[in-house]
Length: 125
Image (tube, rainbow, N blue to C red; front, side, top):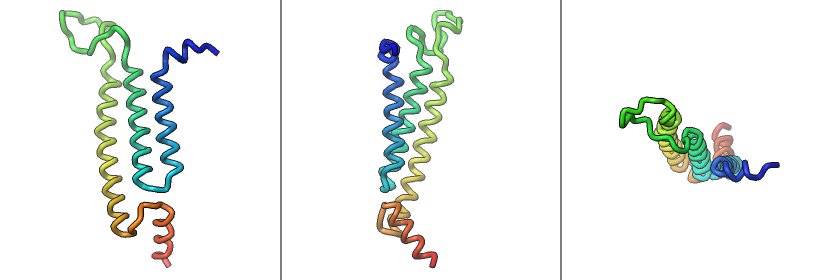
């Protein structure tokens, strides 16, 4: 195995590690707030990965200056636009999840998913 390739792409490894941390947090915790935090960690790692893939060393932001119109002088703006759009959507989804969590807490006085499920079953009978 070539270790130099892994060391030159350590940023992608960090993004994958963050995604794994967020995913395990989402799966292993019963607390709804911790699940929301895990989902935000996963979102952030995805945005980091997209930003890393869109960046090319030695190229500039896609703003035409000095009369240089060659596409090879600039980075692709699409990954940056996707990251920005994703962040806006992520903030909206997080706000919605937190508001629903507050409503669940006011009704059941707990944030534990198992306890909420048990209380829901008792209400159904």
